[in-house]
Length: 99
Image (tube, rainbow, N blue to C red):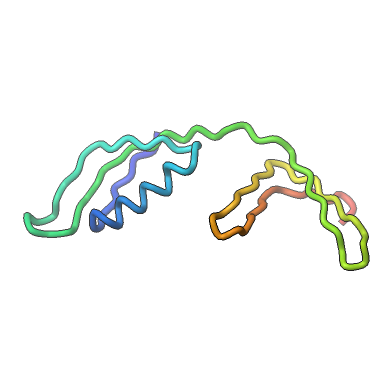
């Protein structure tokens, strides 16, 4: 379990923790909230995180060059993330024993 102290406005903290809800690997447990001053927007939030990584499988990507050649990449621990703006992020480890 990880423990974290985060400080900022309520709006900033809400947006920050909203990002963790999109990742299944993190489970967030708010511990306590402290206001810095009575009329202040500044908040301190103590939270605990459980890190529960999901098992990842190998991923094969195929890309075609401008000349029509197909290139295959076998990625270890491959992850594909699709964003709302239509972009796709692919991450993984590639070991080339001949490189």
